[in-house]
Length: 76
Image 1 (cartoon, rainbow, N blue to C red):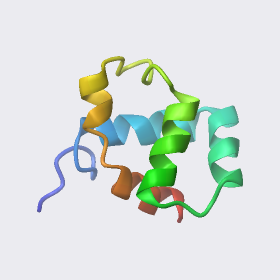
Image 2: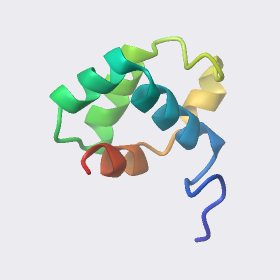
Image 3: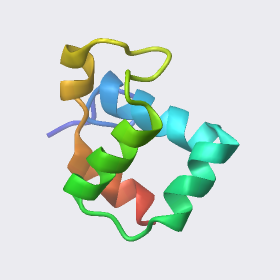
Image 4: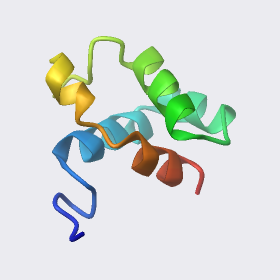
């Protein structure tokens, strides 16, 4: 399957990763909670951004995040 947004599955996945990794506090929290599964990445992502990222604030957008891909990236 070809990459669809800046090397990520979709915009929502890219956006979630961008916000977590670009905010010092959320980045440190993400690092401290390694390793990740998709379930754990989703739990942590929603702990950090319970109402969505500043760019994504609807349940539908958050439901589109590929948590498997997020977990893989956060484990690197």
